[in-house]
Length: 376
Ligand code: NAD
Ligand code: MG
Image (cartoon, rainbow, N blue to C red):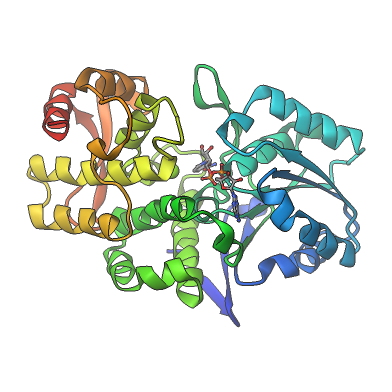
């Protein structure tokens, strides 16, 4: 496990990747320190801030102020909010804006926003001038605990999600836990599903801690900082061991095979299902499926599901509003998922609370039998 360094109310996690190592600073008021933290590491640079129409009115002026105070001139490009922004045309707009501003290779692209902005801006940073400096300032819980760390960047194709992109690590991640207070409760909860995921992967003691402290994590304060830091440390450790997802990084997909299939079946309609909700239902399904396969006790499966329910996350397919799904539709979506190889289905299953493992040889028949029982 990667160390967490504490200093005052904030914490630092280092992602160890040799020459490409970087710090994640986590805590309240980190945004106010962004200028000095960036200037200290890269004096004299200029910045292009990429953000979206929801985040801009909340944080853009403040961001540009603190950069200016640290001697960093910045321009901004404000994209529409939402998943549709991870497109070739929006990528083109960002790339063109960075070039039009005459930023050089040593200058920086800053992503100020959720995972959509981080994925888009990171990809742009990775390809403009063959790779500019890149800084992540994640403003959603999901982005702070997941998408801003690890270097996966990219956009969607009409043929599927995240199909176009590069691995490109940021040089710094600044996670201000106070900015999460303007998130909608639904977006916060969705990000919390990914927090629970780290506990359920391989940290039973973190899962128990969340059972006790979830209300404080939602309310803000030191528990929120602690939770974000523990997730970042867990992701940093996985990324350090498997930067380009050849092996154990797959464990981070707990709940995601079912989750992605549900998102696809709901046509990626965020009114019906957002990613974290799909992951919550997916984790509940992975635990019930593990119980059905005799890998985990019914009690442990119920305990995982109950915690998700306690914070108001969905755990049943029937909770997704809109037209009902069929087993065939879900199996079709699972088969299209990129985690399928040579006809065998790969699932992240579990042998107990916080004891997940990669199962590469699950037969489609078992999965469809299980899903039939879940759709009743
Ligand atoms: P998002 O970026 O769309 O943000 C969700 C919503 O919250 C948006 O409407 C946004 O404008 C708004 N918002 C952001 N910060 C806010 C704040 N502080 N206050 C109020 N509103 C705010 O979605 P997300 O959930 O952050 O990220 C989802 C994306 O992340 C997906 O595209 C997914 O593919 C990607 N992702 C990438 C990785 C990776 O490793 N690169 C990992 C997980 C997810
Ligand atoms: Mg996810």
